[in-house]
Image 1 (tube, rainbow, N blue to C red):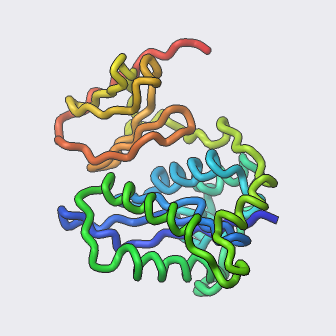
Image 2 (cartoon, rainbow, N blue to C red; image 1 turned 90 degrees about the vertical axis):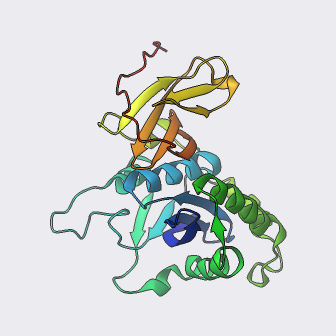
Length: 254
């Protein structure tokens, strides 16, 4: 049975003095890191964007275990609600398991990974910006997954153990991963011939192969996420405070 553990860890120092966070996800059986996304704030959109990307890449787990944080569930609020994370689980047929209140040892494997992450990657480091932090984290995670034998895995690497079980994962249903993109914080832009989208005079490259496509952009304070359907392409820092034109780009049918 495939089970992922997910949590949010802080302590990512940026050059401008901000402290970013990381959404982490670990496969319970193999200790393979399925998700490690850097975000300025642990908002529902940011967390669910990285969650959706992990499922798009690795398939859909049967179960997922998180704590009772508001970004993961609304079951314990004053007014019981279904938050976006819970909705994505429901629409993909995932059993969302929750830790017992004040029992962090339930997610022991991801907590142990966090200790390693802090000791070997975060301690004493300051990153130029969010994008640099993500790039360096991606490289460290690749090494962790593929080059680090674990005694608990019979000295296999997480990737070796994960490959033998990941085939059981169902493909992600893109329709169920796409969040509601109709709010005021969402805009859309057409990718021009050279692979650039422009937001308030800021140009961001998403690749020439996407020329002509319409992408969705989520504005979240000083950052913006660029989506192509259910795929999170980039999270970038805005380089100015100019007013953003809200006009939606025209989409072609089909």
